[in-house]
Image 1 (cartoon, rainbow, N blue to C red):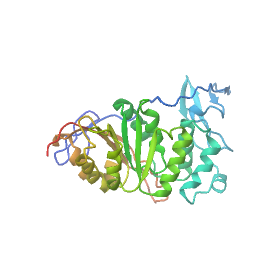
Image 2 (cartoon, rainbow, N blue to C red):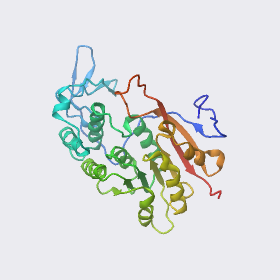
Image 3 (cartoon, one colour):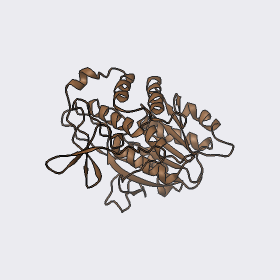
Image 4 (cartoon, helix red, strand yellow):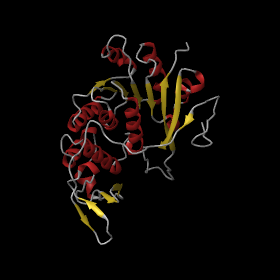
Length: 315
């Protein structure tokens, strides 16, 4: 796959998928922080948010994060200055080790502070979750789709589930499937702590095995209005086809998939390609989220989210 420009068609094996721009600004519909941040002025005229301004992610703990700054009323992410003491105070040997840090940094019910703390933890311990650039794209796509029944395959620790839950309309629900029980347990707790325990349900198991359970949660004749894939990349296509066969995918269903370029899911992309007639698909460029800094000469590769809308059954 390659693109000649952000607005042109891309071609590989006949692909007619368009490439769209990346993330934009997002607002939350389910969780809003009404806290007014205190600020102090520096000699340079830059205002810094206080530690209590959770809605801007201004977390400050022994220098672990330098917080955000306000320039012209806009929150701008400051540079992270890593504190070596972080690793001894917050060791990470198992998934549940993230919980004490999150709860030390974020108030219960403050979803944006929970996400900011997860991002900070991931800066110290590179962690395979969506990260902010792609999360903002996902949130925008959820807002555009306005789904009442959303499904996620591959939840890990709940980062993308919280972003999705924040972006759902008030009547919307999200059902997630996570293969690893330890990850599912942490995701449930973080989703609950962020304030979405009544909105998000997390099932354990393989995606294909839980499709009957997903179907049971739909009303007769109802389809999933939004599906997000971020699990086993070779599983994308068979799981999508199984969802189609089960009647979970219907006209207007939005299907978003991560890592379709790196590590890659070429068979899935071919299936959802616009030229095949089943879906109308765009690729949205974004950096690969898992920064493997321990690898010599590592350069973060460019990746993309695929955004597909089901239009027809061509079988």
